[in-house]
Image (cartoon, rainbow, N blue to C red; front, side, top):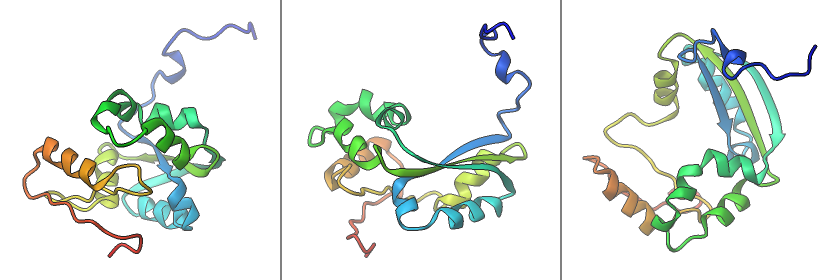
Length: 156
C-alpha cells in the first residue's frame, strides 16, 4: 500500500446509484422505538436493507444533511436554524441503513414512507418550524390540494 488516495471518483466506479439508498432514521424514530418497523416497511417495498448502523449524530452531520435550511435560514426569521438542528440531532441516537433495490427504488421508498400525492404531510416537530413557517412553505411550493393542519404532540 502506497498510502496515496485513489483518484477522485474511482472508489465508486461501477456503482449503480439508481439501486442504492442511504436512509436515516431520525432521533425521534429511535426514541419512539420505530426503527425496526421503518426498516421492515422498507424491506416490504421491494428493497433489501443490506446494512444498519446505530450511532450518535454529530452537529456537523445535521448541518450537512440540512444545508438547504442553513442556506435559506433567512426564510425562517423566527428560528435559529443551526441551534434547532443541534438540539434535534447533536449527541442523539440515529440509525443509518444501506438499502439496495431494483432501479426506481428511490420512488418506491418515497411511496412506502409517505402519503401519496396530491396531499402530503409536513411535520413541524419540536419547534424546528413554526406553524406560520410551514404555511409559508406550503404557499411557496404552490402544490394544489395541500392544506396545513396543526396537530398537538399526540397527533390529533
